[in-house]
Image 1: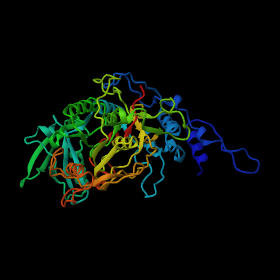
Image 2: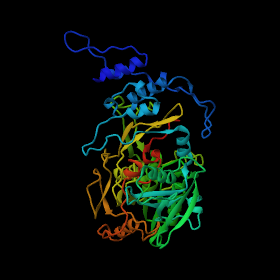
Image 3: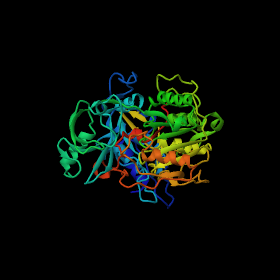
Image 4: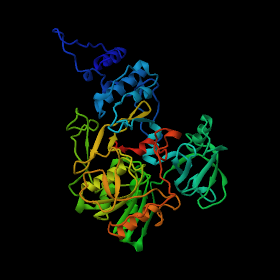
Length: 527
């Protein structure tokens, strides 16, 4: 079936009468099928089950009016056709073949693959609007405060604690769960060897609860212990701590901070961290973003400015968004002329505690050391790429990042927030081609500012030491590299865990099964 026929079928079911001309013999020319789809403005907020009242998070009244499932599906088709980066590669299937708006949305993406055979669009997903509002503005998600690293997803499995958030059930245990603790059983099921469907379901339900007040039992082996212990945790609404372990090392010369999430609450936390390190007089900085999957691009632009300062960033592009061919000069979401995202010298004010427009502190560094892994995604990669574009040396330690130069403006409709790729980001040098990730190359490398290779050291993740411990492998490599002026990387150690995507256990999800909005590049909401 050709594209015109596909669109025709969809529109007839939507109650829109269109025609498709035949070729040759003097017949009328075919209309552009992309002009025949429903309009966004006339289908938005028309809901099969409209909500009543207002959001418990934002306080804003729900805009829903009575509509139908077809209205919701038509909105998604129209919105996709309008703003999706690869809208011409979408088949726009018949809505009647899908029994929900989210199922239909899942089909509204390109099916193309990259040269390596990977899906071109691996980042198409939805969230309930209430969950997204809680997560993005307050850093609230369901769990225990333990962030799990699935080192090996198929038997014999290896699942460890990557880090914990303070003030949570995981940190309240005595002793608290710590980095490197190994999960051996969940609710009596052998995590290492059980591969039955019911067993996997039990493991997933226990590790990743979807509701609060769910109690589960875990057999844990703490790092360095010869014995195991059994602990019980009850899931709760967890407020994550996006910035942790802010400290100085090497006699106060080197600052270190663990940066986990580009969420609104990271804004004041990063301001406080940079202020603390500036007051301490650090001359170098290590940013640990190995578990930072991304989030708000504005947070990335703020942090990049706070690292580099005005001398290196004033008047320079942090990231330029490029949209589909319908919008070469205008942002399809904001309707403003496309302009580069700058290095923000003043606060955006995503968090209510931060005064919008207030001056940001800065360190004024010409180089920065970053610790990365496969969970380092999107907005985190933008920090690295944006700083490189401004001429700041970025040294990388760990493993290749996930490769997400794309981003979204979250779109809410009828209680669901949709994430569909709308832009690609490039730095001041016009570089953004790192869909296979940014990777460290051992030793001192120059002349690679427009490539996906960075100078640094390839180092496996080390679960035998706490994050921020100078002996932890990736941090130790950064410190050694700094001392040797870029001439020395450690010999790869044996026995250290190299994480994998756990396709066997939870599908193609991020290493820590982080919420998908936090593994992406999210544009600042339109106010």
